[in-house]
View 1: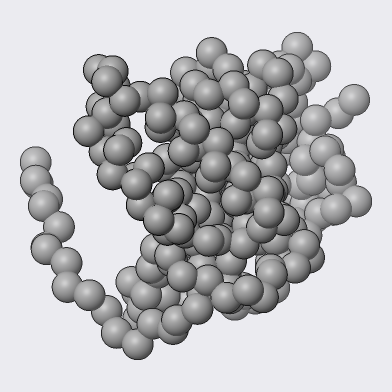
View 2 (view 1 turned 180 degrees about the vertical axis):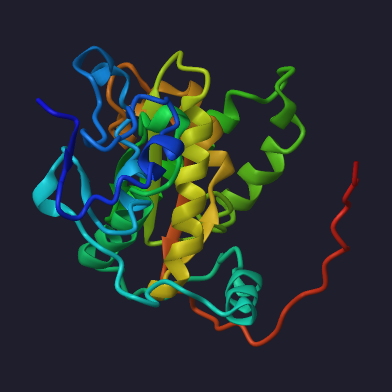
Length: 272
């Protein structure tokens, strides 16, 4: 099967597809031939799509789901720097949520955006578990408390904090999931060094995209640590065998709006 499909009428033989290919497998066009990926190089294709989207005349299609090719309308996705700055700076870690659930449709729309997060060699190893029922989120918090109890009088770094968290929980404070209605878990293959980083990158995309859909988020560190080592929680979350939690994120509709920006120290930058 041909890796790229090239329209000989539209192709100007500009050579950009050859230049931008990260693995240098697109042979350049000349006056007698079009750009081509030879069969012996086909298995090196990362399906990244650079060759397709950089083509100024839309002459080239990466031959993967070609019927789903989508062109970006003129001006679409362009943001003024000021608007982008405010959007990013307004992002908050949300710890108070309304009882109004986020619809499955809205969750899937955000995850559709997140599909485009970068990953090492475009492997895209991240898969998702959405814990949508608040009762199941509560159960995940309970199991995390159980895990914290096993850390008391051990050398684990959370040993000092575990009793404090447990006491707060027993007083009725959900210090684990903050009474969030939903929980998102990014899981990746075990024993793959870079996959966990891919998971963090993908979750960061969710974190950034979510507010545009009226969704607030908070990184769930306690859930993540427990899910990495406490089998009952891993089973409760439904993480498949051979995969591991990269990180978890609480989400729901924020109870409060943001009306200002907090102060932050200037970025520490070294120029060389």
